[in-house]
Length: 356
Image 1: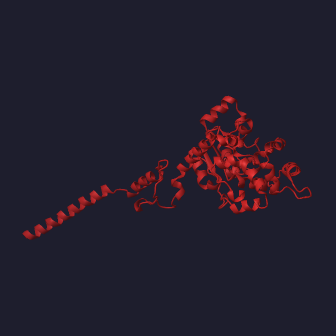
Image 2: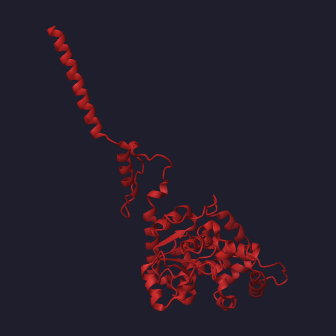
Image 3: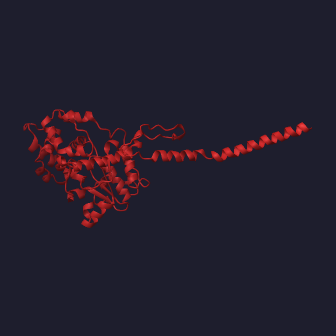
């Protein structure tokens, strides 16, 4: 009987110790998902020091996020945007490039900058770089339409109906106030690829039916710059390149008026050395840049950038080669000389495959 009591007591002791141990385990490892999530957030949002990129970017097994993994570029995004702004500052200080990087903040520039007072945003328009979509974003933010999908295409570029005020419409004091305090951004793309896009859009396809490009501007360029006077075809890309590369192009620009916004330099459009922009987006990395801009502007919870068709933002070197095929090296070099400031300011490589 004595042994039975001892055995029973031992069983109770084992059960008691097991309960204590279980409680300890529960208290120590309670809600592991919350812990992992907190660690994951800290891991993903920590920015590397400038100049000290992490050598390895592997997730520890226990911290690996569920669902869609972030792309490699997500880790360097903040550094990328800081480097873009630093590059602009350095090029702006380069005296050798001063004539190509600086411009006055004139009415022409202020006309390019659209204002969203409600969310304190300034957007400088750089045509042929997906600007229509950014205009739609601002139109919604300004309250003219409830959603991007509901904006009629013919309204986007109608500045009497789209509810987008230009910075030039404000007093000097109000302009300066907005330039100093608002979030400011614009988008760029490879300068030569942008010129190809402008040529196709205005002189070849002309989807918005703007007949003055073919019937007024094109004949003016052909009369001045076509070498073969017996050639009767419409404007060719070679004519366009010769016009843009001519150091004396401005007399034609004056005749063409504001239509030149589709092919003048980013410097002439947005004055990046005179205006301190918050973010510079690149068309080639728009899938990353668009969400980043919306987040930095504090509007990512209000509106999304329209869906980007796959491959549409990728730089197409083959297309660039095709368009410049047959154009003299002299004319291409003169074109580059005009747009060199854009190449240098925004980190686009010199197109040696066209120049040499």
